[in-house]
Each structure stands twice: as C-alpha cells, then as structure tokens.
Image (cartoon, rainbow, N blue to C red; front, side, top):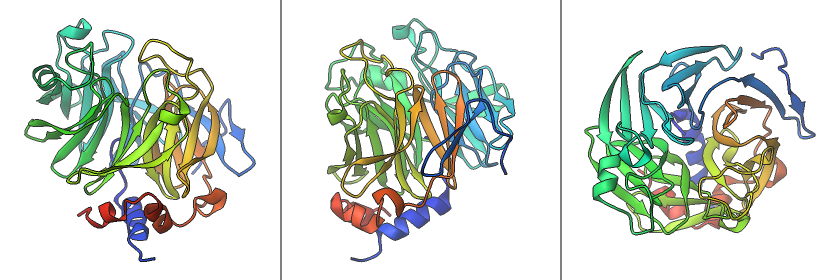
Length: 354
C-alpha cells in the first residue's frame, strides 16, 4: 500500500519479461530457522490500517483515532507527527486508513466518516498541503452513493480500504462495495473493476498491471483468500495464488511478490470482524499458485511495505513490526518469476503493461 520503489518494480518486471543499520533488539524480537528476524519497531499507535514508504525512506502510518499521519524512522523506530487535523474515525473502522505519495506530496484515504456511518465528513482522498491543512481532491463517498454497486451493501458510501498510485491518479479498493475505483488527480471517480462478493483489500501495481488481495466473503475460508492480477485495460482477471484466509495486502519485495494474511477466520461472524489474534502470516507467492510462510504468529496485521529485504508490518494493535533478513527468492520454491508469470497466464498482461 502506498509509494513503491521504482528500482524494485523495474527489477521484477524485467525478470517477468525475459523470454522462455539496525536498532537494538526490541521487546518481542524473534528469530526463525530460515534466518528472518522480527522485532517490534513502534507501538502505541491508535487506529492503524495502511502504510507507505515515503520519499525520505521513512514509514508513514495513518492513525485513524487521532486523525493524524505518523512518520516512523525505519531504523530507530522514533515517531513524529507528519500531519494532523484529518477527520477522526467515528466507529471501530474508518477514518484515515491509507496513505500514498506522489513526489514529496502525501495523499490520505479517509473512509467511514460520512452520514451513513454517523459522521459529517467526506469519504475520499485528502491531499496534505501542510502539517495541519488539507484539500479534498475526490469525494469518493458521494460517487459511491450516486453510483451504487451491483452487489448487496449496507453503507451507501462504501468502505474504502487501500490507496494505490497509478499513472493518472490512484486506484482505491472498496471492500464493502466489492470494486476498485479509479480516481484522477482532478477528482474524477470511475469504476475501474467490479467484482462479486469477494471483498477486495490491498493493491499493488506496476504500470497498468494491478495485483489485488481479496479476503473473501464471511466466513473467509482459505479457498476464497486470493491474490489476483489484471491489466487496467484488459477484461481478464487471473488468479495468482490462493489458499490463505483473510488476505489483506499484496506487495512487491526484492525477492518477489508477497501477501499478508490477517489470520484464521473466527467463523461465521459479522462482516468486517478481524481474524483470530496471533494467527497472521507474511507469505511469499510460489510458482505453483500457493504461498510459503515467511513470518508467522503475527497479531492482526493489516499492511506491509518493503525496503530491500526488510518488511514493515502494521497491525490493528497499533504496532509496527520490522521483519528483516527475508531470504533470496530462490529459496523455499519461489523460483523464476518468468516461470511464475507463465504459470498464471499473465505474461500477455505484463507485456502490455506500458
């Protein structure tokens, strides 16, 4: 979610196109047999969901309960307020939920603050103009109200989940209205892709290729947890990998493509209910359309970002965990990414990505 590293994308895409400074250990640090090392980087955040690596290399995390965006030093874990004064969450979900950068400018996705959720603010994308001033560039809630989805819904303004920078603006996933919206920098909102009841969550992109995580409908079985891929100008949607419940994010890392599972579903519960505590996993996509666990036992994770071989995982408990030493993609069956692309039938989509 948020800004991506151009060099990482270029390296991964180039492979697809080929023919046939550490902080002192924090409380809760753990090691695994494959050499990864997990440690608590920051805690005490309030209302966390999405995140992004900013142009300065720091991690930026919205705090929905405070209406703020917090900057976190990726080495020391030191936190500072980057922006304040955004609409605060009016219910358990919502508020400032994700952030992305275009150059030095931050954009924040705000959701569930409109009248249908008990608030009086705009569900949409807010441009950060100064530390405490913003401009609403797109009223996504109003578009959603006047352009309802084909699937059943309760909240007419939707529940926007992830913000992803793409050429021309942003893609926004709506996990309640089961679709992905295109939003231009001038505020024009259109429906980019509509789905059945699959609950789209995290987004990742390079050029016109989009990767999307889907949590699946309640009760969020492993069979309905998927990573799918589509070209923005092509109707096909292909399954990249499946087999884990409540997938909430997908990211390019230096070693390939990764997904984040919030964990095991608690059963047939109210939509929007979190997974069981301490059952989340960071997963690597493998060539056979499955996943290999990179880190296990995560507590209600919601977002992941990468810097090199280090992942930064944000969770609902207001924590950020740093997982370092993620091994080379050749280990654990990640294999050749060209073979990966061929296996899922998306090489044609990749070839048309520009």
